[in-house]
Length: 191
Image 1 (tube, rainbow, N blue to C red):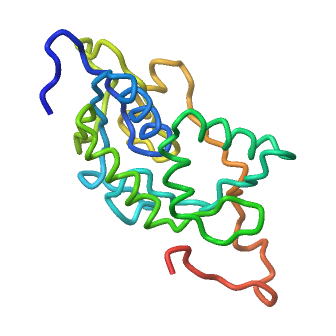
Image 2 (image 1 turned 90 degrees about the vertical axis):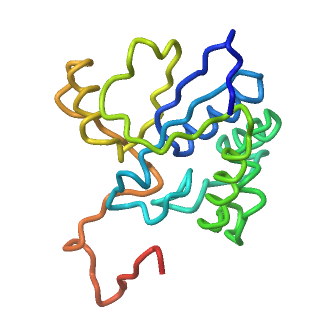
């Protein structure tokens, strides 16, 4: 991709849901984007593929009821604004009652294809392991709970926080020893 010499690219660190949606929306407005994603150069314990926007927790985007649920209303607003995430979710929807749930592989494949084929988006498969350099005029850091450890440490030093936290209300952390395995079973989500 050749960038317009008069317009600097917006750099986005992180190829998850937020980073991909931001890249898509910015590019839709004619602004070039460089999307930095560390996988497959650096992997995580949760990710299984190099695909962008790989879902590693729940495959549910919660309720899709725009008439009676705030989350469903947000989905509708995102659709009206041309959301890539919602377009890919709708195209890869699986039965889930009133929830919007997706086939993980199809969903991330659709996001990856759309991002990689957009002429205004350059995907750089590299780890950003420090705060963005000064020559990156505009930056969005859209990393989540699986942020590169060196980048997380740099962010912690910058903010003065001793730990960064992420909360996912859909995928709570449950300790195995608190589960009655006589009435539950263990299965990999990849299975």
